[in-house]
Amino acid sequence: MAGEAGSGALRELILVVAVALAGLLLAMVAAFAPWHATSEVNAPAGLVELRGPGDQGVGPAVAHVG
Image (cartoon, rainbow, N blue to C red; front, side, top):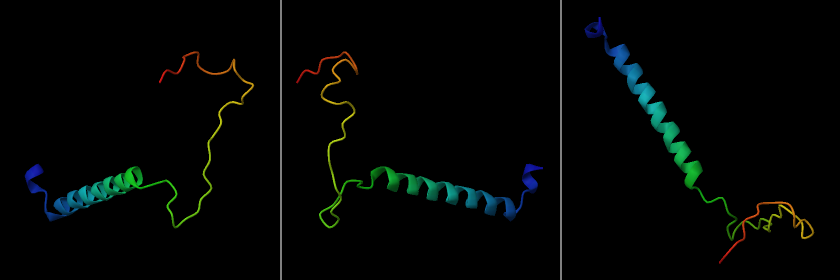
């Protein structure tokens, strides 16, 4: 039965591989595209605070060295 597969099966397999490669290309563009603000686009940038200065008891108990 596998020997009876015609060009329709081959065309479908090529389509599946092409869609998979297009998805991989889009994923790589999304992963490696620069997400930071460029000099042409003035996006506001700032530090994100996860805890305030008075919240010394909240957070991990690991001291930062370095």
